[in-house]
Image (tube, rainbow, N blue to C red; front, side, top):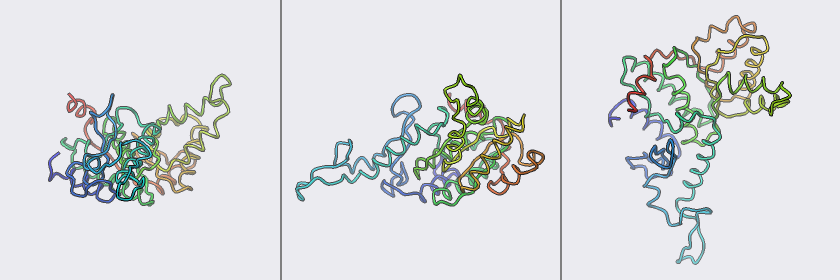
Length: 290
């Protein structure tokens, strides 16, 4: 990513608005102090402290992150304690986020803007940055991302969740509509399932996450029960003023005849609709990873 690129400008804008634990002039973390290192730890990488934070450490890096100050003759907090506590919070939130493994740690600068639809992607990214910043300040305005398969909707939605976790330590969650919502709720009616009788608890949990991605919204519309479940979830999150990001292959208007238009009405009130027209992002992503 070039220093003067539009993507780098968006990244700096986003990071400058968040609370920082590192040096403001650090060229690696831009003052955030916590970054995702794809080569740190096994599998897909992990979050870690930036070197500019580690250089300030006076403790051994283990809880409670204190050290002995000879001048004060007392145990005092390490200068890196706030950053280390934030890091542990971030690691915990990521583990319980439900974000698919391939999208863990994917941040704003992991988006490919080199294709024919780069202008469209940058517009979507600009809205994403505004959503992250606003949500971090408690100002909620969701997104409805729609477009063809492979346009990067899931990636962008997970980037938003990852940045909310990293920059603001928001409890964020990813749910695929068929598997994590409708499928799990159906299991609650099966006496042989471990989830039997847990429907209300599952619905309440989905309705309480401060930030929730509902992926492939609209795939399941085959029954009045499904439509009722989706409306109740959307309505609950709307009433609780919680950030909701939806991805779909269809525009919002495809819901106008469902549930007497109630779903569409709620979607329009709580989400900004963005059409993603990019060519198959997954093809370009796979080439870049070779």
